[in-house]
Image (cartoon, rainbow, N blue to C red; front, side, top):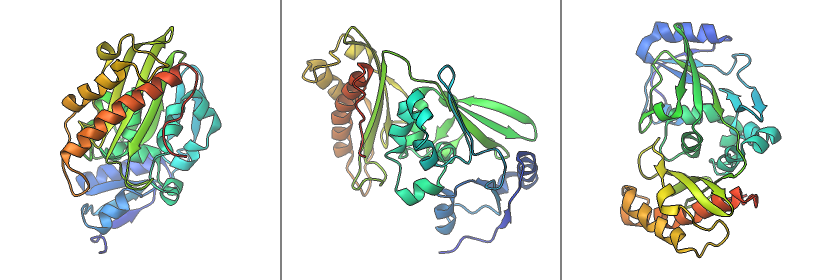
Length: 299
């Protein structure tokens, strides 16, 4: 199927792109890498009358890294470029760990991480990573710039809180810190496919035991919601996976996180994956906090 008729715009500055968006009102869509938008256009699941391609806009393909403030990456930074950025990986390892699970090489080479985040797909990895890290998105329109906290970014599946005339310019995430570990893993039919269920975890330890634990989910629960398991895991061992608290938190997650059935899996099967992954990924994050740096996910 071909896209419905539309007008294509390719501005060279952010200001020009914002002006065009303001003129076309709700009839326009922004395109960066196009790996999410183009399939929707081809299947006519989206039918904007104007496409504003920001691929020629200057200075949106940079990555800025600071041990103090974290990592900031522009709207045209591809998944592959960010994954391969050694300094970004060192300052915030969860970025590369999440990107390692995103789609397939061809898509990672063209798709942009900012675009994936604001696309707000509950089955995608990077919206969940941003949520858990508490990052921010900087957006711009003809009215100026504003910053949206991750907690306020997602309005629902495939729906963000960006206004129709706003462009996402960049995303920033805080740096990793001592004693705080992260991990991510998912179950998919094939590596790179959308996850049946995924878990992203952040665990803080002191003297080899958990003091805080927070997780968010992919293809389960509500996008943009972080679940606090600190009470359930307080005092759990960061080195012994047989600690009963790790198994108990999996059962707690099974009873807490809502799952849905579709053609790929039943709700009960997804709940089982939620339980198993909550225990596994939570423990991996605790091990990471212990400086073992366990990378959860496929290479």
